[in-house]
Structures are given as C-alpha cells and as structure tokens.
Image (tube, rainbow, N blue to C red; front, side, top):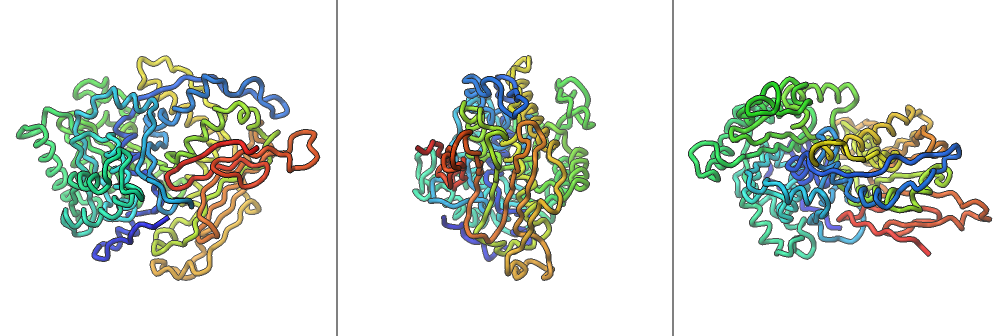
Length: 566
C-alpha cells in the first residue's frame, strides 16, 4: 500500500521526527488512548472457569461452552476500559512500520457495538469538555498515527462534540502551518475512497476535524512556563464553552498523550502535574476534595487529580517503557510520583489489532479449536512480524533499542500470552455496578497473561538467532558505523505448563526482509492413525499457508477471514 508522504522539509526540529516518534509502528495510539481513558471503568463480562487438562494434555469436558463464547466476543471491551495497569486499545487504525501487506482498504476505524459501545451510550461524557494534548505533535508518530486515530474517533462519534486537540512540540509552527502539515496524513487515513466510516466525504471530515486542532511551541518537553502558557489557552477555550468568565459549569477533562521518547516521560509528567492539575485531591473517601476513592490513588500518596471544574487529568504513555527491568522500574517510580495509578495509562497498541482481538473468539468461541488447543494436537506456534523496508532515516532511534526491544519484548509477547494463556475466570465479581465488574475482568485477563510469562524459562543463546541487514549502518542518523544492533531476531521459547509441554513457540521479527507480513501460524500434528502429514486439518485466517496450519494475517485495516479449507 502507498506510504504516507514524508515529513515536512520545513520542520526545523529534526529531533522531533526521530526522537518523538520512538517508532512509526503505532497503529492506534492516540485513538486507543483517548477511547480507553475517556471510558475507563465500564463494561464487564461473565464466563465459566478455566479448562481442565488430563495427564495426557487433553482438555476435559467442553472448553468453550456457548455462554463463554458469547462472553469472549466482548472481552476486549473489558480490557479496553478496565484498570489502567492493563495494556489496552480500542481502535482499528493501522500502523506505519507494522502495516502488513495486502490491498489498500478504508483505514478509518469502525468500532464494535459491544459492551463498550453500550457503556459509552449510557454515559454523559458527550456533555463534558475534553482537551487532548499530543506532546511531540510534530513527530512522525503523531502525524502518521496519533492524529489519524483521533480523526477516526471523531468520525465515529466517540469524542465529545466540543473536543479540542492541542499539539505541543519544539518546532516553530503556526496553527495553519501545523494543520497544513497534518492534512495529507489525515486524508490518507480516510481511505482510498476518500470517505469516512460515517459515509461523509473525507475532505470535509478532515477540514472539520482540523478546525479543532491547535499547535503550541514549547522550549522543551519539561519546560513548566511553556505548559503554563498552554494550559492558560486551554482554560480560555474551556471557559468559552462554559459561557462563563472562569471555570465552573461543564466538567472539562484533559488527556495528555506522550508521543515522545521514554527518557522524557518524567519531565512531561512533572510539568503536567504542576500546571494542568488545578486541584489535587488528597486523602480518603472519594468525596469532593477528599480523594478519588481509588485504593491505588491513596497508596500512591495522592488521591487523584482534577481540573478546576472537577474533570479528570490523565496521562498516556506507549512503549518502549524503559530499556530493561531497572529502567522500567525507575520510570514507573518517577511517574508514580506525579500521577496516581488510576490516572496513568501504559498502552500497547498491538492489542487493538482486529486479528489479535479475535484470537479470543478463535480460541474460546470454537468448540473444535478449544478441544485441539494443547500440546497433544499442536506441534509448534510461530508469531511473525516482517517488514520489507529498513529504518529509512529512523536508525538513530532504532539503534538504541534494536528489534527485540522494539517488537518482540512487547507486541509479540502480548500475542504469545493470548495464544498460550489459560481461559481467565471471568465470572461476576460481586461488584455493585459494571465498573467493578469491568475492572475485575481486566485484572483476571492480566493475571492469566502474567502466568504465561512466569512459566517461560530464561532464554539461552542456543534458542536465539540475531542478524543485521546489509547497509543498516549506512543510515545517516546512525552514529556508530560499527553497530551490532540486531534488525532481525528469531527466538524459541517454551511455556512450561501441562497444556504446552514440549511445544516450541517461535517469535520472529525483522526489517528489510522478503515480505511485509504479520501472522500467527499454528502447526498441528497429524491426527492419530493417519498415514501421512498431508491429512492434517488446515484452517486459515484470511488464507491458508500450508497443510496442517492455522494462519492469521494482520493486513492493513486489521481485517481477518476465518474458514475451514475443504
């Protein structure tokens, strides 16, 4: 499919396009963040317990009864609106680096009419004000993915009518220059037909959205006076909507999305807390001025954050979340000093891929799949992420992280946990409302995924292949021309549980390869009594790639087709 136009030549902040981006593979970052944060704590599901396994790795009983199958079609809703500690996503916009081959389709998001939709419909959020601040707005990530995803939410009616979108970066631009630079990316995101998912013309939709977009330059990402100026302008816009001279009336919420490198997360969080949180709640029971009532808030040392009108202030960060365990823990510590856990969102946008979300339905919504989903029937599982192009001027960022930290440690491990986890017990939590049930469901999903990670033994050198494509160091943004940074990695993992005993899980990722593809491939064993492997069943997502395999592709637009080959 066609690539987005290159960044503006007149962008005087070259750092922004490399540093702020961190990656251009952020499918639904802004949209997912806004949807998840704006609707936090709603939803909920009910389901049966985990599958029992006998001593030969065979499931006992029916692993996916119909009630459970119906429930799991909306589990992604619960994940999206549950606890902030659970990586979440609600969007369909596709990625730049992670877009995978196939014909070009309408990339404007459409949203499921499941429990999240019902929760959104019930709430009065549409009568509240919302200011979305994209920190790092002049970088590739923001232009190619965050703003198009916000446009998709706007087109689908999932942003309040009075929403304002503020861009903040170090580049010197006027509002009109910034809008002109965004326009090509937004037009491309409406699809080849130039029409939005609501049926309106793409150009008209983009123009309407751009009228809500403004841009402000800051001296640095942590410069408090720059944020003071930004917040003062935000407040004036809020007061205009109120029809009042100052504050009050309509509740105004503020969402800060960080499209910047992780090493400045702390600086941004500190500046936002000092300037955008006009009233901080301290202590106890969740009443006016007395705390949020969230135990995580109270444990963090501050009881929540509000604007003067009582709206929330939330912070959204994407991966990479640090470079290793020590830096990850350090970053968490820094952020927790500024934001309570319930107001902080750590997002992995890969969970918003339609194919990734539909792994639930495939695993737990098909009786035949449930009966076969164990080591007695499956020979191996492969998760692949391939690009047919290199770093293309973004090597300065990539060289600091490499393919393992950039893709495998987060995206592919997320997919692995969905494939290998035991069904979470999504029964009713006994809570008073859907918020508690949704929180409980998200926690149970997270716990089931963490259990998979804990069952994977440390990787040994014999289980890893690393490589680097020829010409990688020729990227002008790479300073170390002798760099050994891997651009290709294949890792063999084992999940030490009764279900997966003896089954290798292969994670493969690389740049400048022979194809552009993202797929999950499950190779089944021949059925008992067969005379050749050719009699192995073949099931395909989108298209079959070989005998005895279940294949799930992630094409642009995230569409998946499931059927059984006859």
